[in-house]
Image (cartoon, rainbow, N blue to C red; front, side):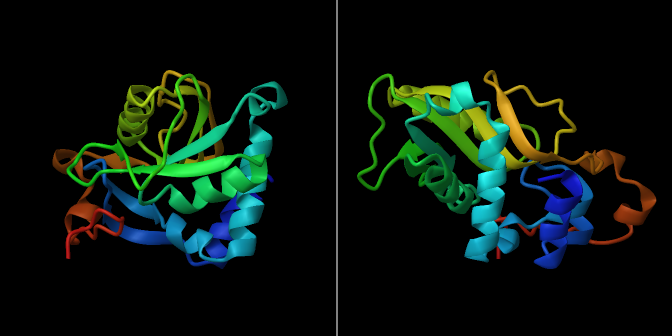
Amino acid sequence: MQDEEVLAEFRASKALLEGHFLLSSGRHSAHYLQCARVLMDPARAARLAIALAQRIPRELRKDIVKVVSPAMGGVIIGHEMGRALEVEAIFVERPTGTFEVRRGFTIEPGEKVLLVEDVVTTGLSSREAMDCIRAAGGKVIAAAALVDRSAGSVDLGVPFFPLIAINFPTYAPDELPPELAATPAIKPGSRAKP
């Protein structure tokens, strides 16, 4: 799947938003990719997961025995990646602010894991999820995401395979361009406060 085809999937599902957004990283952007919307159609989610799985080199794919994704945003794409790779898919979550393996899920000692995210911007959540996987005994051998918002600069410490890398500029709160500073920020992600 080429980049324009991926973006067409986001546009078709009205998941590519424009405005003033406060990202979960604390940075601001004029663009937001709402992966939950692009994944709400099971057929589209399956297509995207298959395309993402194909980005991972075959020799690495054959070693993956489990997909782990961080809740909430990574759950659907993680599940679909498990299906595409024909392995189990579980998720980690933050009931008290730190990722934990819960709900009867297990990661066996030495189990080779693929971390799957919806969007990676700074990589902080990915690294925190990988710390949880390692603490549970797993070995993260690669990471994958639908979208890399870091413009290729994120270092997760393992091979990283995004379906698409997007270079929408992001800004710290004290460096907003005038057009963003003039409008209130919307926090559309799963960590938005009501």
